[in-house]
Amino acid sequence: MLWALGDLDGPLADEVKIGLCKRRAFQSQVYAMRAARSRALAHRIEVYVRGEGAGLRLKTAIVEHLRELGHEIDEPWFRARPDVLQTTLVEMALSEGVRLLSDDEAKAIEQNEINKLMDRTLG
Image (tube, rainbow, N blue to C red; front, side, top):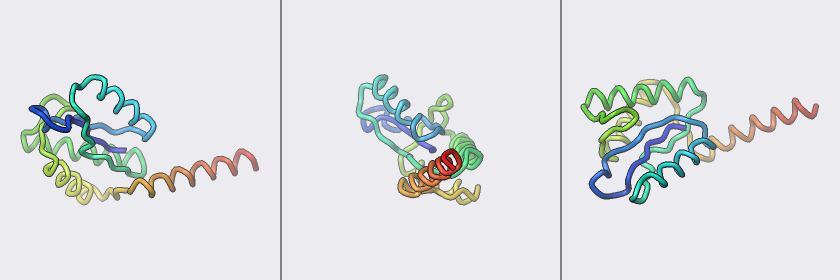
């Protein structure tokens, strides 16, 4: 899962932290950021990709593009409006050939993997 989190409003609303992790690990990142920030948290990007390699390619492309635009503060922090982030996400996914998955698609893939593992384990 590729994500970008930041303040919902206020003077730092354009600052986002960009990361890549498994869905379960994302929740702990959200809790940690909520504890560290005084404002409500905004999920600027929250997309699923299949495969760590594809996710890493996409994150790297987004980070490099934001750097080229002069939006880096101190990685993993960037200053970019939500519309810039969304446009960058779509452009980089297309250029890297990475298919973005909906939450339902990601859950279905995860469930399918669990079913395969259960079939192998239980015979």
